[in-house]
Length: 99
Image (cartoon, rainbow, N blue to C red; front, side, top):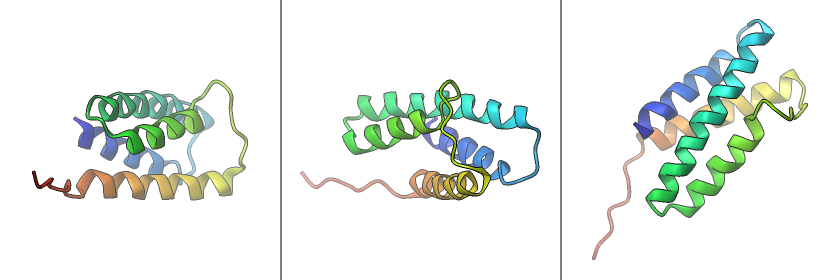
């Protein structure tokens, strides 16, 4: 489920690069908040503190209630960087621990 959430969020963030109505961007922000919230919870359950902090920060960045005004160009850069990061983290192999 974690991989699916990351892929869906990445696709939505890449779709933000297109010329879409403003309502789409609001919807993406809400979906991103929920998706990153789920990822924070899963990272916490797995004891992955770094991922928990990163996903928590992204949830705050994309939340729709107190908008962070970065301008269209900067938001596009953020969307691409976060989308690429999500895809990398979705498809990277977990490090095997040697006990």
